[in-house]
Amino acid sequence: MTHSMTEFAGGNTYGEYGGRYVPETLIPALDELEAGWQAARVDADFWREFDELGRTYSGRPTPLTLAERFAPGRRIYLKREDLLHTGAHKLNNAVGQVLLARRLGKQRIVAETGAGQHGVAAATVCARFGIDCVVFMGEEDMRRQQPNVERMGLLGAEVRPVTIGKRTLKEATSEAIRDWITYVDSTYYLIGSAVGPAPYPEIVKGFQTVIGQEAREQILTAEGRLPDAVLACVGGGSNAIGMFAGFVEDADVALIGVEAAEAASTGSGRTAILHGSRSSVLADEWGQILDAHSISAGLDYPGVGPEHALLRDQSRAVYLPCTDEEALAAFRRLTATEGIIPALEPAHALARVGDIDGDLLLVCLSGRGDKDLAEALRALSGLDPTP
Amino acid sequence: MSEQKQIVIYLMAGAETRTLAEAAVEGGADLIEVGFPFSDPLADGPVVRQAGERALAAGMTTDSCLRCVEDIRARIDVPLVPMTYAALLEAYGWERFEADVRAAGASSMIVADLPVDERPTLRRVQLVAPTSTDERIRLGAETTDGWLYLVTLTGTTGARSELSPAFAGLVQRVRALADVALYGGFGISTPEQAAAAAGIADGIVVGSRALQVAADGPGPLRDYVRSLREAIDRAT
Image (tube, rainbow over all chains, first blue to last red; front, top):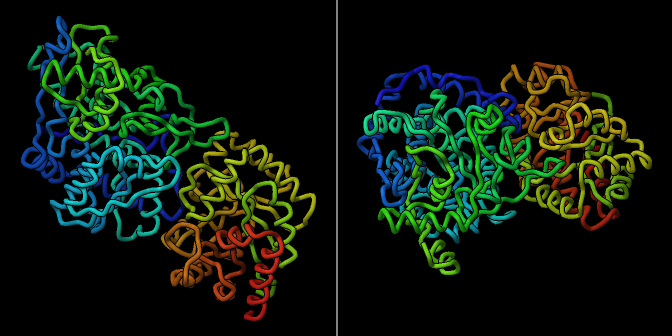
């Protein structure tokens, strides 16, 4: 895999979205991060190490799987980020940002996590490099994602329960940022999605672009043409922005983001400021952030990365909602027809496949469902048993 | 500095704020910060955050916060400075917010998550921190509205056991770069800390501890502010 040095170039704002709405205390740290990122971005050695770890540690490239029984009569390919080490695309970003943290000389990582996948990825890479790792996680998410809490502990990370507000990803992110403000000199904040103050959205996209680059090459090899549409679930939007990056210049490829119906910040949000950037957010008329709801902890977030808001405004990408019930049905269907248990997050994208025109579709299967078994089985027991 | 050291007391906007502000001024406060609550206040520790949550739960909106400022203005003469987050201005309209807080009787405003180089046209009290570069301190001092808010520590608002050791160095750096009144805030709660901070700066800001005392009513708040005043006046 080769990285073009120019394709990550770009400013820190996405039209009217993005920016740096953080206390002044953090600005020098963001400037330092920006300088470190700009230097790394054009450093072939940096990308060589990133690619090497991807190949020898993470398990890249991940394959494409044709889901023939899931969607009979159509050609639906799954980009198998679920096969990545630690079970989700989050590892791409954790590897990249820990390499960046090392360049900046930081010996302590702080991260937030919702579903626990980013926390596990961060804890994993920190274990690999011997760096201290503190992960903030909402108490409600700790309950929903207990196996990931145990994994993080085993990996040597300290998981700090967050007991404020709705006790999910939004509050965990705020607490991680507050920790970063307090220990800014020693600490690198490893944000898990393409959100936050600049340059984080650009950095996270930079490390997730590998998904779209690989997938584009792979589908051309498999089918000799580009897909009619590419689908990905959107919480903060990092797997989607990485997948979309491979196809955004291909005007004939539809880009479809799928959001949890009650966390549809792109589809039904308004312009507001959350966690350091202006984007499309579930907020009231006064700018107060509203609570999101989703069975999927990874999508249970009232904000979205600023670039998604821009892609929406430009009509380059379309964002569709998906209910908990629809996601659960797709979760069960993929498991029963393909022998692949998806995470509940990408199950949202799978659920919309039937509504999208085109013979050839590509879906980002951003993670595996092991972490969701207890929650999904409990919810499924209350649903109609017909797949 | 020959002028009296300034005491700034932070109160969250709400039904009791007018009475509390009067008590704070009776105790010796020179300026009242009026918190306009935000759901996700990144610069705030637990006390201010929880006060904001209570205010939001009680139905406070930007409109009712503005009415609260008007209400305080009608009763006391000291400067009033709303303190809030960029999200509220984004929703209300940046220029409209500035116009309306001033129309309500505020002298300026503080936006906790608006760095010194953002929105240069928005007149406000700028904040600088121990992490700020000289260049940013200079910019903050040049563009601030009246006085410069020195964040004494790297961290969020809330009481600490000791005055931040970073504060003296920050004051020294800023004095060498700019000639502007300097008020220190974050982590100042006891009369001893207030006196120590006022000994090197021109004023102090007390938020979290004031909110905790204010929960017991105007009397205790007046006595608390008076204890700060007396400690500062004794020491300076």
